[in-house]
Length: 362
Image 1: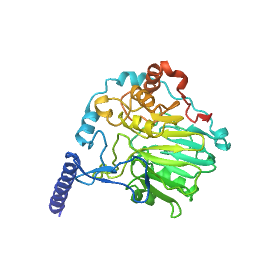
Image 2: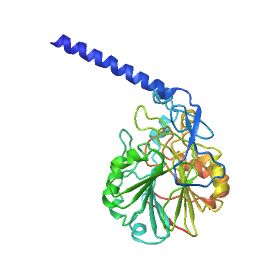
Image 3: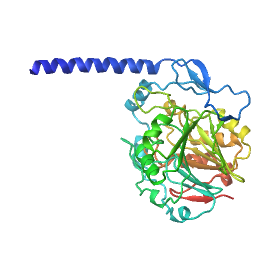
Image 4: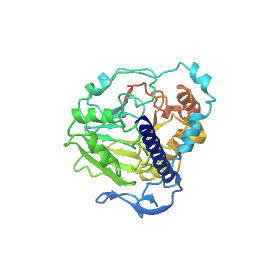
């Protein structure tokens, strides 16, 4: 009996390896443009735009830098020594933590940084939350533990989700939000519906868009657009680039905000500024950028973030995506130190926030 169990275990193990190997092979092949797609019924703001590019396997593609994230690259990074290891171990910097109560209890237009890429925005009476994560993703360490702000958030109209990575589309947080705000609308990139509808209640509306498309929000006093960024998507072994990633422009009657999600540097920042020359607050990631050979296509360095901000011609840069989760090789305080150096000549246009720190729109 034991011999039979052993043989069955070996057979099952071999079959699993074959299946996983076959899946990885389909994931790592080259990406070739096959077609363009858009969300039917939505306005496309770029004249002549054929739609979001899709490759020969139905995967979304970056417009300027086509890429499929190879598992071998991730493995190489994880197995390589970290040249910043000692500095990172000795870096005791952590973001100051403010009390969000006053801002979240008010009705004034502004924004508050809730850590990582989570930003709560109040604009023209509309409440918006980006990439919320109020716990810790599996296998990822938090630099700062703090209580969830959800109990202090009084209203919520829209949840914007830039892509499906678990530190941006966090299932436990989204389930909690949907339970408290069953009428909130969830906005994301194309093909995210199937995943998000499992997380939210039947009364939560899920809407998706392609690049350069405006979400249909009816008579809302704000407009929300989905725009290209340089990134990728995956939640499982075999769904690389199945769901579309992107950034958002949120436009009110007097104030416009850009939320960049995750992105490497590219021409999309200049193009965003050309389509939206009135951006007031440019919210962009500055962390998780080392090692550059691995992170450059995915995450801006602080120097990249400054270039992107200047390309966009926005008024103020608000940094995010640093000092909250341990995701990369650089020390926790490095992103803000490097940003301060890189932006020295334009320091009056940088708005650095404490964790739970806020600003009111001018």
